[in-house]
Amino acid sequence: MRFAIVRFPGTWSDRDTYHVLHDILGQEAEILWHRETDLARFDAVVLPGGFSYGDYLRCGAIARFSPIMEAVTAFAEAGKPVIGICNGFQVLCESHLLPGALVRNASLQFRCEWVYLRREGGPSPWVDAIPQGAVLRIPISHGEGNYYADPETLDRLEAAGRVVFRYCDAAGNVTPEANPNGSARNIAGIINERGNVLGMMPHPERAGEPLVGGDDGNRIWESVIRSALAAVS
Image 1: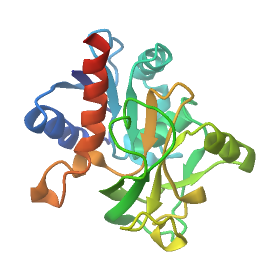
Image 2: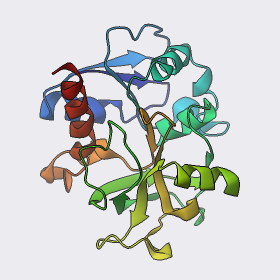
Image 3: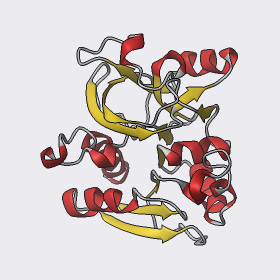
């Protein structure tokens, strides 16, 4: 696959993402400056983590006006796979490609630690290869990762199977203690109605090799790669 990795001023996870996709998984990948406007040559788009524009307003609020975001929106509306990780998730919410918002962690502390996620919800190329109920160990690194939406929106997400990752313990139990940031209903990742857009706070690109503590993050990348292969076979 050909992955576009978007770099905004303040992005810092683009190189980690490139390393995993290109050096470990053997995919084509390119880091694009946020002023680019052409995504025609790519099969998937990644909005990686960081502090776009220094997070001087709401996280992602300035990045959503970058020139490339018009192309990202069109890419997503065409049904092509888009993933937003951490700050990228915040940008997707600010761009209204996903509902809700990411607010300050309930602890009011920056949290950088390994967490467990349970795979749930409906179909998406990003998670279709991961069995229902599977538990992934992936790190977080954020100060504003507390997912918030009004109760009606949360109910719609749940009913439509759009919550695909939820914070849990190592055994897969969803508990308040397993929630690192106070996210509503332990939500760690959601998809859009079509399933092609995924937003998640944990960092799969930081879980790409046993050397760094684990490679469960590769299951997300491998899922979208399998989906692309199935589409052309």
